[in-house]
Length: 181
Image (cartoon, rainbow, N blue to C red; front, top):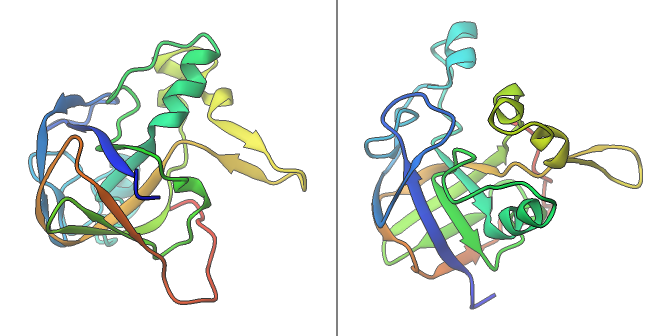
């Protein structure tokens, strides 16, 4: 997976569904993406804040694999980087197949750790009709497959840029599959 790279970066200072693309972002240890509405030690997603504002923020950074955008655009949707609210768009990494606790080294200094899967909500359907169903699937055993990306926390901060290499470190076994967070 030496070809694993950051394809695009995005952030938004307010709680909007889509985010604006940027050439670089600063990741802050224990907080998330500097200047993004979801940056903070405690949960920032509005529905989760309403339920319990003291929850730890396990959704500091949202990653989506660029291959998902390729798939959606191939199905007739029009989805560009940042449109689905991700902070980091990757290419060359099977994000959804990696276990909880996977660490990614982004660029020279930043490191993040996967906490779980993004659970696509109704906002994605409001963005484009039919998109919610397109980012959900069923496994052979009937279980739900969530394709809407992976959530992570920032272990060590740093500046990251589009095109930066990504190094993957798997956690110790036994691996735990990603679950919605």
